[in-house]
Every structure is written in C-alpha cells, then in structure tokens.
Length: 349
Ligand SMILES: NC(=O)c1ccc[n+]([C@@H]2O[C@H](COP(=O)([O-])OP(=O)(O)OC[C@H]3O[C@@H](n4cnc5c(N)ncnc54)[C@H](O)[C@@H]3O)[C@@H](O)[C@H]2O)c1
Image (cartoon, rainbow, N blue to C red; front, top):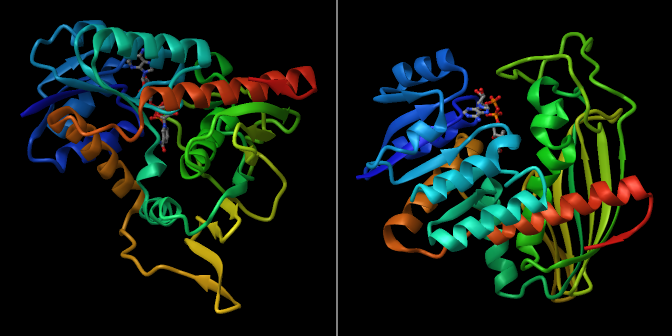
C-alpha cells in the first residue's frame, strides 16, 4: 500500500482524492488544511484517519510515502520543498510556484533528495491530448510553426484567493494560461522559450454584480482583486516556432473560449472543443476526427489518469510525464510575460 496525504482540502483536492481512491494499492491516510474545520469535515466525509492544520506535523508521519499539494499557489514551493526533504514524493498542483525562482528552489530540493516531484499539468492526460501527441510523435503534423493557446472567460474575476496576488502570484495568466501554454508546449515537443512579448490589462475588475450567472464558488470568497483581467503574449522558441497566448477571467466576448490550435507543415490540429486534424489526402483537403470514447466526466477522468501516473512512477519507477523542469520552464515563461508587460517591450529569457 502506498500511503498518501493531501495538503489543502479545498475544491481541487477532491479530484486528487477520487483519483487515489480509484487505485487499489493506495490509501489516503492523512489530510491537512489551515482551516481546521474544513480539514476535519473532509476527513470525516472521506474516512481519512489523521487530520492536521500544520503540514509540517503531517510530514513527520513515517508511514507517509507521498503528498498531493493542493493549497493556494503561495505555499506550493514551501510545502513541496518540505515534503521532498521529509522523504516524501510530491504531486504539486499547477502552477508549480509563484515565480521561476521558487520553482528552481523546488527543483534543487528534488535533485538533492532524489524523490519524485510531479507537476499537476492535468490536461496532458486528456484523451484528446494523448491522441494528438501520438499523431505528432509519428510526424503527421510535420514541423510545428505556430500554436495558438487560448483560455478566455467573460464571467467576472473570481475573487477569493484567485484574485489576491499575494496568494495566487497573478491572474488568468498564471491560473488558466499555465494550462494551455503547457499543453501547447508539451505537444510541440517542449521547445525552450527564448523571447516573450506580453501585455496584461487590469481595468475591468471583479464585476461582482453580474446577475443571474454564477460560475465560481470559491472556498473562501472575498471582494479583493489585485490581478489582471486579461493577458496576451507572443512567445518565440529556440526551434523557430511561435506561440500566441490569450488568457482572461473577464472580457467582453461572445462566450468562453478554450482552444489549442497547432499549425504544422504537413497538417494542423485543433484540440478543443473536439480534436480535429486538418490535412490533405490525394490532393483533397481533409478534416480528420478520431473516434474515441469520451469519458462521462473528462475533468475527473484526467485527474484519475494523473494520480494513477504519479503512483505508477513511485511504484514502478516509470519516467514521469510531468517532471519538475517542465514546471520551472513554465514559470520562466509566465515571469517573462509579466516582465514584458511591465517593461512594455519584448524580453529575453
Ligand atoms: N489542475 C486544475 O485544473 C486546477 C483547477 C483548480 C485549481 N487548481 C490548483 O489547485 C490549487 C488549489 O485550488 P482550489 O481551487 O482547490 O482552492 P481552494 O481555495 O478551494 O482550496 C485551497 C485550500 O488550501 C488551504 N490552504 C491554503 N494554504 C495552506 C497551507 N499553507 N497549508 C494547508 N492548507 C492550506 C485553504 O485553506 C483551502 O482550503 C491551486 O494551486 C490551483 O491553481 C488546479
């Protein structure tokens, strides 16, 4: 039995828990939250034996093999480093940290301890991403020149910790952009970013008064909003490819958009909402849509695949799909977008 602890018992932790509970060789034996009542209720609801309000106490449990870090972004680095140094394997939610410097400190701890540090880039485990990666690896797209990675919302800044820069590190770029930038870069074969030109806008605000529509349900609501509403960037990579990013909480647009589009020399592809490969056969323009089983709850399914992979890496030494260096590279890109926005010019990484 691999014994796991969960740190941060808010919204996303439930998906980690369901993932672990689906595995026969894993037991979640402890949970921790600075909100003691929340942690206690979580433990009671899910039959977890040990409850903590201080993660340092939880990490003293000798039987604990691994932890999921599901706290606000501002404690990812501190907790992940402490977890590694306590001899535990760590699955840390995205973004890996508040910035690249913190992310590099996690990488150093991972290298010193030899424990596993997996970054929660859960979208890499989507069925559509798996299929497209398979086609890309077999060179169906040719050289990928251009990628557009978009996650735009019109529903008002979510507030709570998401919109408090001291706990989140930033707004939609670090919260939503991180998913699509990572997924696009992963599909491109993980090239290294060399320059970034970015812009962010923060003059729309929380729009708390939106009527008749409620998307967010933060565990700790608040009216504070110190992050951007919208971010955009052009990222140039060392292999000549270019990525255009758009990420927002709050825009005046027709509807929310989630898409990753890739343009290769042999074919193009659109990952969301459904995977389509745009190609040519016998001189006919072809739209190819693979037939695959779409899970009832793709979000939950992706987390199940992510936690199963984490456990497989621990148990069988399988090579980790989401290694710490990918989290560090992403934080370097995000830092560069914010830096470029501030300096109003292209910056080098
Ligand atoms: N992979 C995804 O698709 C996805 C989706 C949503 C959130 N997330 C990430 O998951 C993390 C948590 O987000 P959430 O939506 O669950 O937030 P949440 O507010 O619902 O839960 C976070 C919990 O962490 C607790 N916490 C904060 N600091 C702590 C500390 N130092 N020690 C112990 N507990 C602490 C809070 O009290 C809260 O209960 C964030 O990093 C977020 O970016 C990932």
